[in-house]
Length: 264
Image (cartoon, rainbow, N blue to C red):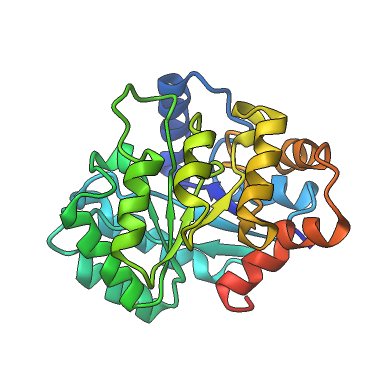
């Protein structure tokens, strides 16, 4: 079984423009057009049984539209939608309640696009509200090629946010810190956070990535691609160069995700 814990999809009417804009900003070539139908087709062709669909409330005014889309995806087979709230939104708590009532399991934060440092006290207040409602929280970790430093979610700041919400279910993407893997290992290994491997095949050194996975421990690592920016086939090929044991691959590819999602 294979679960992609980190993929992005957009409303059909917005997908083409959104993907083109993001590609230009970060100088990446996408593998899909960002629509649900094309993403589902790619995932099926490359052996993915289910994927977490992510979108980001980049501003308070976009929050409700993003979450309407997430809720609409609950009926899609093989799709596990996460919602998003903006930490500065006056409606964030109401949106969390609406998402919880609908059956959404997680919340996506991307602090670069949301322009909020991850350990900002106002943001930590929202993370605590997420934890109280049992949400998984998935964060972009580390640098982002589309932004200039100082970055909003370096491992040191991420650790402060995690420590402030000890009962939170944190997942830090990109091996805990894109372009900051050594710092992620130093700052986050002894925290309760999980990591995903999304986009690491494109940005990480093979041996550094393997050492990071072993340092965090196989029960804390999730398969993810960051589709449309990478694919399941590319990511699996990268991971399988690491020569882990079969049971270790099973944990990364599906078992950890199933446990975190509560058996979905």
